[in-house]
Picture 1 (cartoon, one colour):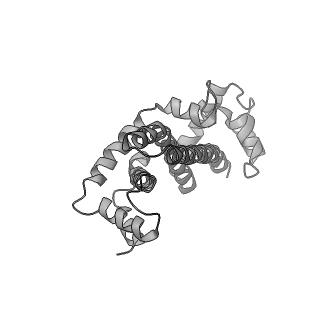
Picture 2 (cartoon, helix red, strand yellow):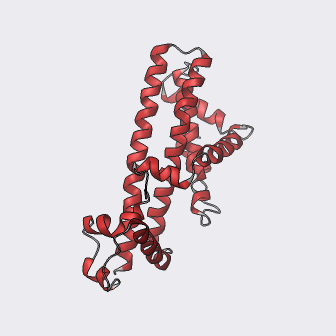
Picture 3 (cartoon, one colour):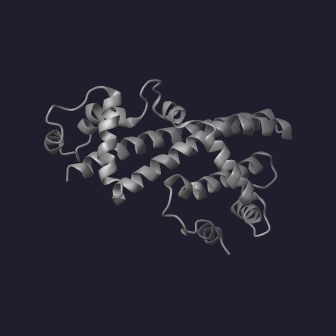
Length: 225
């Protein structure tokens, strides 16, 4: 069985229609598998080759392996160490009113060509809300009306996934360095590992920011069709 076949087995879509955060857990587990394999490569436990990585991957997710259960627990713990507000502050780099809905009408709507501004204005005869908290409240009311539409569900799910991956990546950065040190890995490898982990964190944060803005924009688009 190849690596792709193994992944398909892990990514079984059963019971995936429920809570969006819960349905993303399988991807968080895959991410933790990736991080484990990365540590094994840095620690010279396995070679940097497709065959070595695939072999170790099979061992990690084997029927008798405890790792999937541990990864499941770790994913819940690591993604839950930060509150939703803390995650938003990290992703959008704003201490006050960090949620993208707080800028739904003053920024996101105006910067997305798909949003029909004229129709959106008809929904707010007195004008668009300008205060961040009021914007988020009004946007959320629109979201509740279109929450079951596929484009909204998909973008919401992607945003939540990237948000939780960012939280996990932030936690793994110091934890992986502590693991490197305790394992006796050379300083050069520790530095490279840290740089790689930091790069992953930055890319995930950027992705989460973009998905968050797209999620807000999709709600506005669907509300003006």
